[in-house]
Length: 407
Image (cartoon, rainbow, N blue to C red; front, side, top):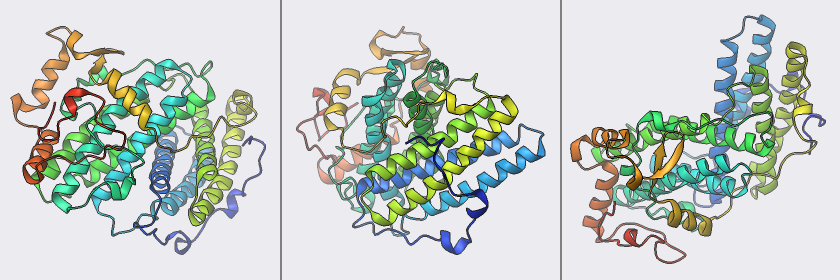
């Protein structure tokens, strides 16, 4: 599919009354886990598009351009409501959180497996092990505080066990910055991978920023607070891969191209007919948004963006189980941290490196972190932590014990 040659829905026919956007929610007991993850991800994709459009509009003086951005942005607000109104009100915050972390784990793993740029693949692999650990911590909190087990949400598609321990993830923010790709030479799949993971991690960061104060227990509030700090690191980590030399119009086209690509990807793998109709509807709208952004680029920069992209989409980005891949990354990269723009085992850092000072500050001189406390409390209550190890014991020997909170 070449989105630059497809015909979408004319913009003037895209506006809808609120009554058409008030989506009947899915049944949480029957929804497929990957339908849920697609909904969570596409909500994040739309939120990123809306944020970008607002920032673009604040940076230009041309009133006609502002009006055009406002028109497409209003449609993207509608799309965001169509997508984000699928989750039902009877899903607890923690159940939704498990869905968010399943997105982070299986989306990141799939993109890492298919990423052509070694530098971007390394960035995906690195953060993968941290989101994998977050899934484990939140799953234990849910069993401890709500008496629910996360397998009811992930359905054994995603294993649940320790990753790189959250307590070890707190790093100085200066080490969260990677070197950017070059838009001119980057594979189109690399560009959409970066923008997609930025949108996904940003939405997770925003979600935790807003719901992290909802738990009644101090342990729950502390866990969200601690992990939300890491999500900020992840957004900085991934967004620094974007080429800063891209113009506003290049970025606009990339956003619209990525929205077309991701709705097309969802359409290719969706099994829920009602949700599939929304992916088709939004794709047809986004094709028109891409056309408009292309015309704006031609008008203001005298460039045709269709010349910057291949004649057809890259392979679709899908959700699928990646258990073997994740286990291999656990075996080989569990002890890595960030050092400047590279990665290194913590054992090889200079003794006075800022990682250790930041660790001491973040963990408050040795007080137990919520991410460790939730495991200790779960072990104390149940005699073991909560795990979903479908492929055998943990691949890292020191993380196999279930009666102690390993670091």
